[in-house]
Length: 166
Image 1 (cartoon, rainbow, N blue to C red):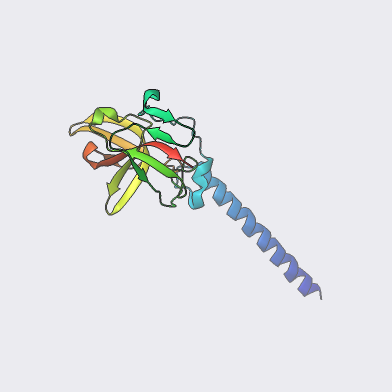
Image 2 (tube, rainbow, N blue to C red):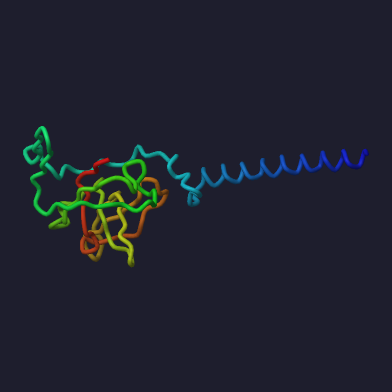
């Protein structure tokens, strides 16, 4: 009987130790420079994010009793994949309003752009705009991602999101 009690105590102690170690590892990963697992990046500090620039002037927004009209050339609607990288700004159920940019001077830090990466269309925020030996580049990052993407160029940018409807 005493051996069974010892075995039971050892099992409980093992489960407790396993839980304690798991929490310790999760805390270490969450507070270090590692990728955040299971979407934990949503808890990161977002105070350094810039807001998008103003693509639509008030003169181009017409509100009526039964409709809203945006007087913007080249406007189109977009839908989003459920990746969660841009939460809480938008996710799969939001309707995006987008335009094709004409030149790189239109695109500013804070703007949300769509760009092709392989076969995927990525929608992330511009967090840096700079110049290197190849000209103007942009660094993007999903709002809920911990790390930025690789450099992209103006030729890679297909759209700029100018509004989101929920």
